[in-house]
Length: 401
Image (cartoon, rainbow, N blue to C red; front, side):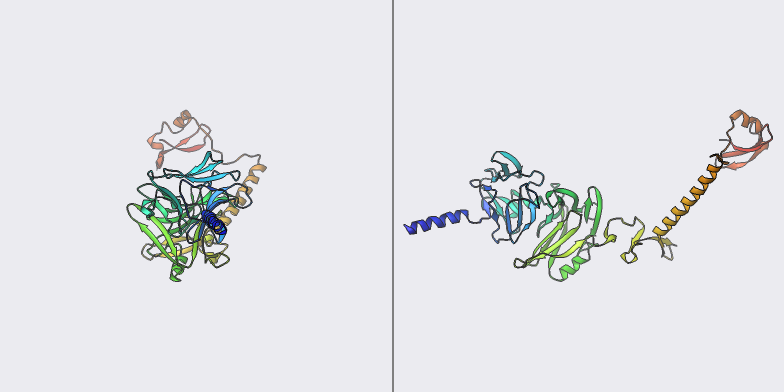
């Protein structure tokens, strides 16, 4: 009898043991989780910060507060009644109270034997049976990044499907909905790494030079230290950037709510994350901070910007002019002149000696003897100029157009 009870207990424990996949016959409710086979990543329901709203997400098992992907970023559950299923056709659906669809995945074809699985890479995928090859995924979370780029996840664009792989910041620590900042590979011209604030460029990491982005020298140092191997691919089908860390390291690249790109590393045994890279690094890293024809130097702070003026195409010399002080001096002197002029006009009742008299055409025709050649003074930019004498004896000069 005791042997039978022991067998039943083992069966029950095995049924509820951590697993990395489900089929249409099983659901995940709030409180259940999927765990990748190497126990790096975990999927389940969570509430960010001080919020009570519930989201379906993926986080590190050793760091549950570090969420790397969220399904329903813009459609939170208001209670703990969420249910996660994979349908017989291969679509992942997130339900409220088993009836209302809150979020669902797409699929490229109908599956015969669908399986939803959390891979060791942190990628949540839908496969058809045991066909787990990446080329045959019916759907994958790596195609819908949140604010975090995981190793082997692409940042870029597929020119065939039009799919963009980009990162978007959270609105706040309590709200994971897409915020103001987006990190992406801009495919215009020669592709480059940029962070945008809405539609405006906030930071530009430069184009790929074969080893790193030209505006990110730290990437070379990180790769030289054997911490990472970076990859950049550009062909007729796609452009993308991705990085793979040293096998013993866990790593992530994220865009935060202030628009900064940050790369963190740790091991499964360590107690905290170590930041090894961030950008922008200083004021000069901000896009177009000094305008189109100026250089930026943090050593000159607070006068960061200098305008480069090229003198002589043959000598190729540059003269640095400090722009900001000159502008300030010009504004001050302009203000003084305007004030003195205003005071002078005020004392004279607001009348200005520079007001020009206005004459009608008949008066000018008579004064110039019908624009006689004998009264012609010369030729100007507005036509011939004639002299004339008004009835009161005042001499004038008038152009004829």
